[in-house]
Image 1 (tube, rainbow, N blue to C red):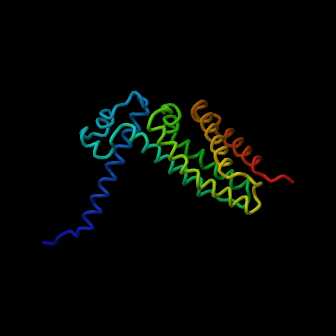
Image 2 (cartoon, one colour):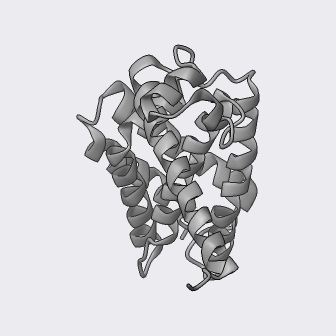
Image 3 (cartoon, helix red, strand yellow):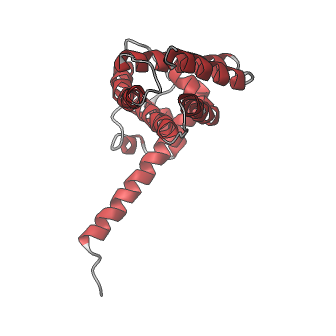
Length: 204
């Protein structure tokens, strides 16, 4: 009889925990999409996931924590979309980044709508999302700094420029996928990219 090494058992337990957490988030996404954030209870999520109410609290202490985790997942998708963009000019990089963000939003329209329509700015979950948002700005700020150093971009305050760009992209995504339900997404994508390029392009 062989004994399973402690490390292997620990890894299997961690994998099982990660899988259960993903099941809960997938269930929450369905319930939130159907009922909205305010219309959903933690018990609804547990029922949709097919687990006991007490079990869900082993993974998430509240409905707000589940909602924040969903948004964190989506933020990671957007971050990957931005950092994987490539190009040999300012315009090429910007159009690639904006295009990938719009593609990710198109594939996750339910989460886009949840984030936009169901977050009360006075709640702890909104404050948590704002703190995470500040953290996500750092790669964009660094990228802008590199663009300025390479002469691709005019000199800008990278912190302010990053937030202006994020605001423009957020508004464009909202218009494209919440108000227009994706109908005019390509037009919003192209105009958004063109405005960012115009803002950053050095004066001649």
